[in-house]
Image (cartoon, rainbow, N blue to C red):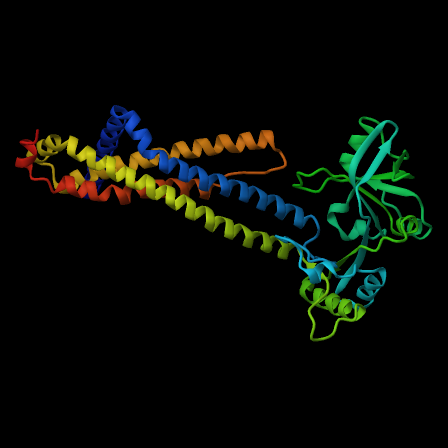
Length: 419
């Protein structure tokens, strides 16, 4: 066996002995060890738990935003995306986008492959079929091309309505999967009539539920001009552009310019409308996540500091209690580094064990949240597990260094005489 291999074998044996001694010490002082790592456990659970929820929401939002089309951009009279806090007075006073604004964008955007529009209605809508009723359906009027522009408007069963049905103001509807299940149960919804706000609509298609969405698919899409005829005073339009491949930025700029001209915005004034792309919405959410992560990191750092002080205190007590043992070990040939590694290993095993306990609690919490609140996604990525264990172990390594060095510096003669 080569000298390097022998050295590695000796190091592994010494490390295993140190770990075993550390575990034996922890078993001997169970209550003291548990109280010592409590701060570490709380800090790791807080950090990992919040990160798990944020990562789950991030994955869900990313999937939902991508289901709107990676080449699409959205324009609305309010700012689009994550808005925290009340809207400004200027934003509240903005006039809705009109159909003429949509036409202006459609005609001016040469980088757009297609352009479509949604017309919304204010208030809570009820959909009814026989004795079944659903409250709060998303009732919208759309052109026929919306089914080609938006990936999340794919029809799973039946068909989409045609441009002719839009122009002729037909009373037909394409409904979401959860509307079909909620109103019809096991009955086939196709060619049946549902009642929305006192008007009957013939169901001709069922939408496919967007990938990754945890929300109910409660959409009821009807032809734009039929909707406009039924609710002539509704003016809230959402304009959606689909850019040509690789031209999303240019298409967005062209649409913005067209809207500014259509809405007569002076050149020195800001936009009086909002716009966003799926990527920009995801970026907004991640900026928000970063703020939350910083706040949670500060809280977790305080917990780790408290846990670290507790570890140092307990390790100092352990050094005092085992002074005679240290003297015996040094008398029979133990070196300073052997004593240092013994106590450092004990501190790292102590806090590392706290990290493992915290991770087990986090996994239990994630599964409990998934079972109790399916709409709140959460998962723990591998890198968070590694980071949590490294963080917990580093606390033991840092705060256990001073007690370990103090133990190593004890005079063996004085240590052997210690009572």
